[in-house]
Image 1 (tube, chains in turn yellow, red):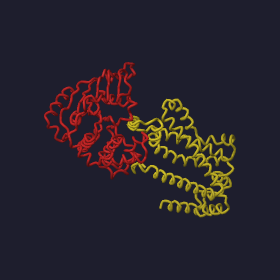
Image 2 (tube, one colour):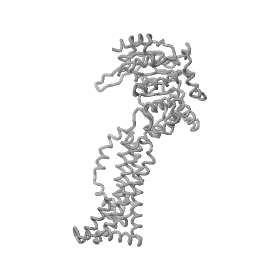
Image 3 (cartoon, helix red, strand yellow):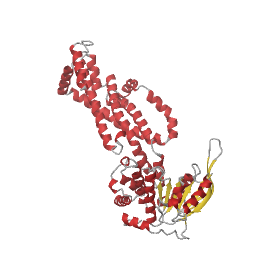
Image 4 (cartoon, helix red, strand yellow):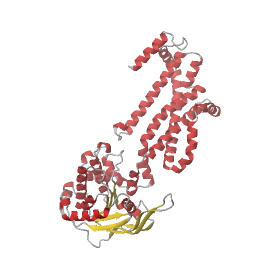
Length: 243
Length: 275
């Protein structure tokens, strides 16, 4: 209902040429662009390029983030030493790294993956670290008395405890991966949806820009829903209110 | 473990008189001159237990009572091998506590059920840690879930169970390990009065029905200690203040036990020292 209302407002603004004739493109015009770009293959090749980088960055940084987060959560002394450096790195506006990464890695997939990874990694590190810290001391006490070895404590208590927080971080990380990749493409890239936006925007083809933005929003929603579905399946042991 | 005994048989056996542990069967637990002191920020060690000598024979149900901070949980942790004594020695089943862990059962005030495991898989947990095969684990878990009348709840998650049901699952988890020594840290303290009474009754039924397991039961509730145990050890200021046998016959009728004059005498004696 809200979507239809927004679409109506968009159409109305386009018809009234508001706020500017260059910016005022209707939803129908944007849809027409998407259809023609899909037919020509331009849309798919660029979507594939963006999504490949998103998934690579998410998987690599996610894996590294989980490992680092769990390790930091289990080693509070090391964490105390590393924490200021991690906080400083995390506070840096990552998009500012785009020029550096592009000079270093070129305008291919590597630079996009690298930029997105810097975002995903810190999100997942903090999720995994918080997750492992939420372990109930009584679970550990009981497990130790029942004879659990260290590897068993990790696999049967610490990892399952951290899973909900890791999952929440991975879910957020996936969206941030998309954000990082598109950000890098906007700056400079051989292909990708961000690059397509930059090109169409520089040639004032705003119907194309709106169309791609809409497509990106749809991709983000689908990714989020997919992760939500997986989360509900895997964490079905949680009370409904916590899911 | 009497794996073949169905629940009804367990209950029938519970009605029979439970013989006292035969003398000379040896000590299950022996603490000799045990002191536990923790360093503090002011560099003065805080002594939690001081020169404790305590021998618990095999098959005896011993309750450790005392006010908060008297060292009763520390004593239990010593027996479980979770705390090292600063001085003295602790022996469990003739060996050092960690080596005896495979023969220990442990129950806490909170049920400590793992929320990502169903009731049945929680009962299987200790067996899994000890490397028991999957099929055997399941068979044992189902037997004990039946014994605590929770077979119907085997596939439920802990959040779907009531507090009393959760504690019964914890009881089944403890029993599934067939422990020679049961360490219990205020296991019924978090339950409401009615649920506590039925959990205590179930526990006594199970304990009295089987070969004798040694029980060390920590509680701050004097009444509970006298009602359940063979012997009450009163701790205070890190020392043993009193050590008395409970000479009330078994099986005990828990709701009626408070009117027994022996119960009253013991209760008054211990309470007098607690304050």
